[in-house]
Length: 253
Ligand SMILES: *C/C=C(C)/C=C/C=C(C)/C=C/C1=C(C)CCCC1(C)C
Image (cartoon, rainbow, N blue to C red):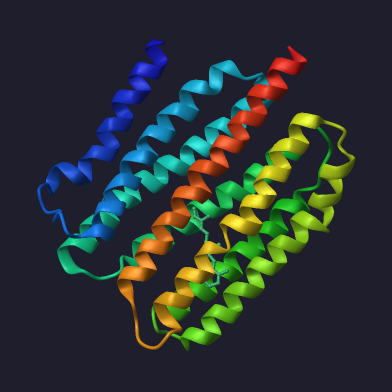
């Protein structure tokens, strides 16, 4: 209990820093700005929740819960800064967004590896390939959004990286290992994460499409869709892993 309390206090401190410096700048009619705010707070709450639930699951699941609480913590801090950029300038916080993604998406890829490694032997190649797919996807997207390369080209490169990740988790070694691992809990977690990457992640290219490929740049649609996507893909992703961990721990206790 004392652990959780001191964790909560340091968390509050870290995440509150950027917001203490800037307050009262959010306009009631700034809908996109309000979503930045709501998601910042949800990320803080999710972090605390996942971390405090660590003690309820069996040892092999604890690292998974630590990793998802890191994902939401990193996102919380970035969301405070991103909100600030948005409300102060009305521009897309593209750099912060991609820094957040480049840190949190690989952590989520580690999650796939951890889920499998908890119940079966799996090669490091699984993680390496997921990482390569992630880098191609995010670098392509960033170059397109930053205007370094043509927006359509960036989109195509990004899609290629995503498809490579989908291949690995559905048909590659990761997919095969999850089918053969024989653990109901791990399969449940793996399948849920896989659906997130297939369905939840599809929201991101939609954001890019409405933001950049419908003629001109539509920053409001872009950020609204990306914010919704992050909410689903970080918090729901974590909740699925948490639920599988709880179910599996109860079963094997
Ligand atoms: C926590 C953050 C997550 C899970 C971010 C995921 C980001 C993507 C799946 C981005 C995908 C993109 C494409 C598939 C093509 C267009 C460019 C991107 C980068 C928006």
